[in-house]
Image (tube, rainbow, N blue to C red; front, side):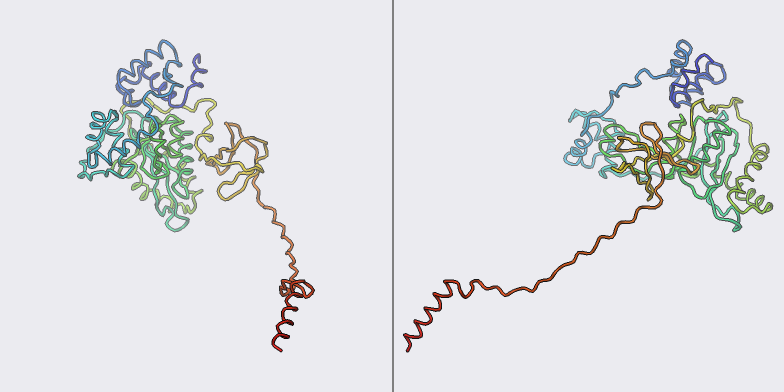
Amino acid sequence: MSGFKDIIMLSQRELKKLHVIRKVLDGVVKQIEAAEMLSLSDRQIRRLENRVRIEGNKGITHRSRGKSSGRKLPTGVRDKVIKLYREKYAGFGPTLASEKLGELEGIQLSDETVRLWLLESGDWKKARKGRKHRQWRERKHYFGEMIQIDGSHHDWFEGRGPKCVLMGYIDDATSKAFGRFHEYEGTLPAMDSFKRYIKKYGIPVSIYLDRLSAYKSPGKLSIKELAEETELLSEFERAAKELGVKVTHAYSPQAKGRIERLFNTFQDRVVKEMRLQGIKSIEEGNKFLAGYLPGYNRRFAVKAKKAEDLHRGIAEGLDLDNILCIRTQRGVRNDYTVAHNKKLYQVMDKTEAKKVQVEEKTNGTMAITFEGKRLKFKEITERPEKQQEKPLLFIIKKKKNYDPAPPSHPWRQGLKSQNLARSHAKQ
């Protein structure tokens, strides 16, 4: 493969883009379909197609890579806008406020930027809208174009074992299902099930899931981050972005109806099947799913409108465990120890790093890295007991009565003479 080296140098996002453009060049995917998959215009697809045809795989890279954004807002613009709004434009809607800021203050901002800033500062509140009419949405055309993901909390073992969560996957085009039982619905279970899905089918173009904090960050951007246009991502979103997978969040269960209907079916069929086999643990349940799902898919999956599979293979050198993990920055103490999750770890490699990155893997292991290099470490299970300090002995001395002048002091002698003279005078 002549362009293999170029592919390895590309980011996962560019790999996905190149994957789709190659499908266009091969005549498998139409330009208008590629535009929808990559959220680009038809003109951009044609431009990328021409560049890849002429320059090869490196033609997919963006020309502005490494350059600072020309749209970056100066620090402090947000504070100035909020202050002006409170003093001069209180009560203005975001759209009108953005127009007036441009006309009267010379501050050109989009109405959505102003709306976001006002919502963050509490100066504007979302207006409640009427109930939306939900229109039927056509399935995607390709297998792997979009995967719906969700977790189902249920007594899957009917009291024979612990309550658990089924992390379920369903392809939007074919309704092919994939699932795995976990103790809870969280970041690591989501990453573990996604890793297993990728190893079975490949990397999908996009995923569709709800707004649980494990999937979407509940945090808010600071003023500095807003000015720098920083993107606030959950660990799962960060991992999906590194893999070049587009993430879309649903605002209601009805929006991801296929995965919800899959859970209704599984809570009936799968529960009864496991009852017949006497399955009573998560481990047994996962073994059951591995054998049950292929037959289920053969029976209930539908044929996609287009036959091509858009899942991407795992590129050589791509380590899923290094991407699908929880990354946390921790400080390094003077004795080369790192505290994490109420545990203390001793870094064996001497390093000048003030901060390191702790990576929690889906298989329960952990790694400590600095600038991409793994550091050797060990957990400190027994901390040295503090030596008991010897009690201080205090010698209590009896306090003497204070005498400003001893009997032999001249002051005493003079006072004695005065007293004698007074007594003789009285006589």
